[in-house]
Image 1 (spheres, rainbow, N blue to C red):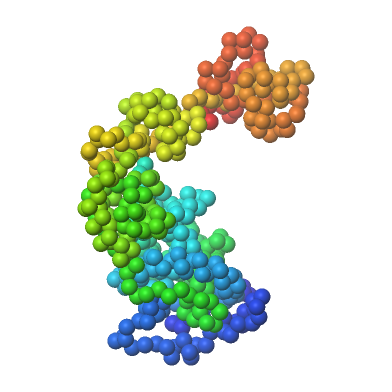
Image 2 (image 1 turned 90 degrees about the horizontal axis):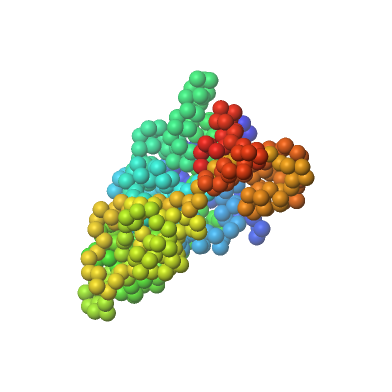
Length: 473
């Protein structure tokens, strides 16, 4: 099909077809210049970008989709600057891991496509972290997700899992472009697309398969970023200097410690500390679950010295508490000696919810409490909530002259809710006998008067209009 990208066996970055941007035409990548800069293996890379370029090993993709993405990125220099500056904390570690596994180093650029290198990124489908793991896939690759941490955001753990997954996909499909398509679309989807093409006698490469637009653009996006990194001058792009040196190092922690205190003891800005330790999504780090933190290279010794010298009280002002029974937030707050608002806020508990028995909450640590949170709690804590009022779907027969407002008053519901449940406006009227949908509290679903006057009717389950006995909302 005209315009479809085609695979190139060249190991040199693809040439841009003189894309035109608002500031004027750009010089295309000069292949001779790109290859002439190939350095002997004995020379030390000038910086991390140079080191990464030497490890580019995937076949290049060429075509209109790649050119389009090159133009998109190159015409947004501020966006490229933000992305690359953010990545400077993580790239050295990722490149090191790729080289250790003998994987193509352009895979280090994949988080640009997934999350713009934002470890706190969360997609509408609930994928999280700079490598964008879905909850189930994260669990499959041993990324813990509990009440106190989410390893899908952890820099080391998520990188390990992402490269494990990419290696697995490459072994399955024998092709990096198909492996990347599977990373985005799912291995089952790619496998079925290949099977369909085989059945129809069609090709089975990345460009041959029918796939969603997002996946169709996925490898062209990565190729475009690779081309810009390979020759930024050709795209008038400025890459920040990233030294070929570790940005961070691991530091052991032996006690539970507040995130703010850890940053202060390391002499690191809180935002920078959180960028290196994004899996800690609560104000405290539990040593039993997270025995190491990441700190900028020069701050590790500062932290260790200040940690050992700290004498101003407890390291942590928070601890874990497990609800012995299903409780209201107010009851739980009274048991742990906190205000309801404080308990609700630190645990992100929405209004009108109960805390179910066995849930683990973050609560204030008392001055007399010396013990840190046990490992089985730090590793497995979950918080489960239930609505204070359980509702079931019911139907009401409208009386003569009945309106949304009158039915809302009769059953103690809001006009907006009744209108939403019946897909009508808030000022709508109903015909005599018309079925009106309500979601009523379980205890009010079949009021005594309704049995004699027929105001509320429980629709039998067999009708497909499950009401009183239907599933909870």
